[in-house]
Length: 369
Image (tube, rainbow, N blue to C red; front, side, top):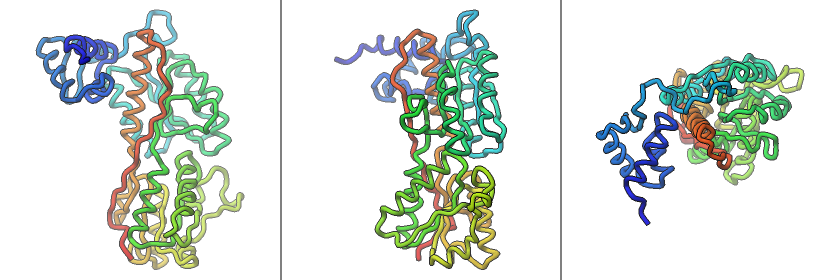
C-alpha cells in the first residue's frame, strides 16, 4: 500500500529536524521513494514554510547555524557538542577526505574540532582522549597506522571510545576489535584492478609495482596487485618493489628493502610499464627515469595511484583516483545518522562498512605498445 503523502512529509520533517541539512537523495533512499517524489515534497513543504530548501538539500526552518542534532542535556558527556576530526599530519591524500567531511558537518550546523596527529605510532590516542575529555560527541578518524603492529595496538582503545565513531579510509583486520565499527573506505582492490586492466588493454604484459608500504592503503594496494597480477594470464612477469627509502616503517635499508634503481629493474625484467604509489613518489620516480634515459610513455607507461598531484607532472600522469572527498562526505553523513539516532533514543542499527569505487583518469603517461 502506498504511504499517504502527509505521512511521508511528516517523516521528512522529522528527519530534517533531527539532523539539520539532509540531502534529497538521502531522504529518498531512506524513505524508499524516488528522488523526484521527495523533491516535490520538499518544494511543497518549503512553500508552506515548514522547512527551507537549498540546492539538493532540505534544512529546518530554525536559524542557519543551529546544530543539526538536538543538543544533549546539560551534564551529559557531549555538552560541548563538537565532532572530533582526527587525521595525520603531512598527508595530502587524507586532507581531501577531511575537507569532504567538514563540508557535510558544517552544512549540518555541527561544530568541527580538527586534530592533526604527529608522525609517531599511537599519536592519535592522546588526541582522542583530549577531545573526549573536552566533550566531543562524535569521532571521525583516519589513523596513520604505518605498520600492522601499530594498527593492532590501536584496536582496543578505539573500540571503547564511548561515542559514535566512524573510520575514514581504513578497513581493520577481519575479526579484530574494530571489525564491527562503522567505516567508509575506498575499494583499493578495484582501484588496482583498474590500473592493471588499463595497462593490459594497451598490450603491456610485464608490469612493476613500485609502492609505499607505510599505510593501510599502501598495504592494500600491494596485496591487491600481487593477487591481480598472479591471476591474470595475460601478465607474463610482475614484481613489487619499494618506491622510496621513506616509504616503509623503520629504516628501509636496515630491513634490506632499499629501493632499487627502477630504470635498471625495468630493463632487467623487460617491463614496459609500472604502477607507482603514491603521487609524489611517482613524480620523483618518473624524473629519475628521465635522467636514466627512460622516456614516459615512449619507453615505459606509468600509472600513478592517489591522483592528488599526478596531473601536475611534466607529463601528466594517468592515475587511479580514489573518491577522497566523497569518502569524507559519506563518513560524516553516517556519523550524523548515528548522532541523530542516539539523540532520539533510537536503537543503533547494523554496523555499516561502506566501500566506494575509485576511478581511472587517463592522461599522457600511458600508451599502447
